[in-house]
Length: 446
Image 1: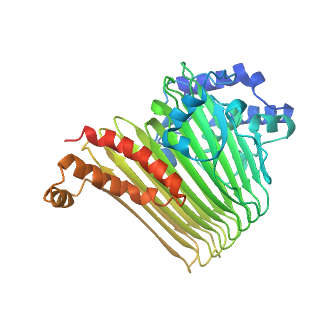
Image 2: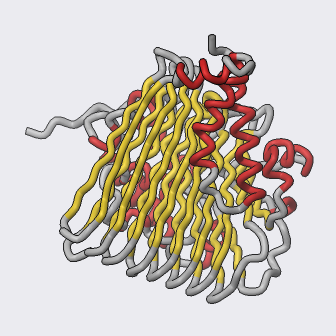
Image 3: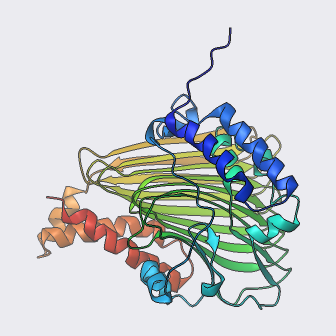
């Protein structure tokens, strides 16, 4: 006998919302069919819950009490000054800008796209002319994440489709700004594709921000990264979604021969965040370095889940994530490194560390190694601890006030991850943004 599971209020609302807005979503008949199939997949699976191993600490079925209406017809009423204020220190970075507001491209705030070898197209435009924007659900590494990606496929409204031609080196960073501004909360669904051809080099910044006055929203974003042989990409994501907002993010990275992918994620000031990264080595000699810093306070929940798939020989991966948790914040790190049969000479290391500023904070870590080859060098580690009282005493004995000493120790702890950013200007900007929020975390501590 088959027992049908009872759908939650949010799950039912998502299915109803799709029926209400399907005709307004961009794309032709083929895209409409893909959307319909995706919402069917979601209806069969429902929101991820604790019985799914990858979601045991981030139970969306319980956490998402309601589903907000999808944003399909954004009306932009912003000034450049408001955007710069929301970007904080990132506003001073000399970058090519592509701006999306409440799920729609805002060309009036976007830089001119006349850079030789670089093509940037809004996803909504691509969906009108192409059969599909990339079938993410076909990715074999998405086990446990299919429902979130299915929702992204069903509701996606816009995003950036980026192509950098062979051998082109982008002269300055490309800043993708995704701003939420609406006074009523809404569901914003975005999909990006970043493709670098052979030997191309670029820095891409994803900034997901709630501007002042924006209501708590829900975001589902997917970024598909494809690196050709010898390509180099520095990919930085900053998530400041709002204290009561939810942000679901999926990165799919395919790494070609001898390419280099350096990624960093800063997450703070967001109610519920799940950052998924699925990286697969497709060419020998490729290198992956992904790091991140997460800062949680109040009852914020920040989950980082990685799957790094060494499918070919002679590749290298490094993962370093550092978190600071105050009040009742909950941090999660799940990192899985897979080495396939015959993928010899692979080198994979990962580390996750959390600094606990409150006895009520929680950090759950689950590092995994799945190795099917014998000539490899792989390792992992995880720690959670309070501020070292010995170091604090040492600094106080030298005349440093206790609050300042605590702040310096916390900043030093988180700085090890931020220092992985190679671009000096970008590193300084994110360091200052993190420092401002660290001051807020430490202010309430005894």
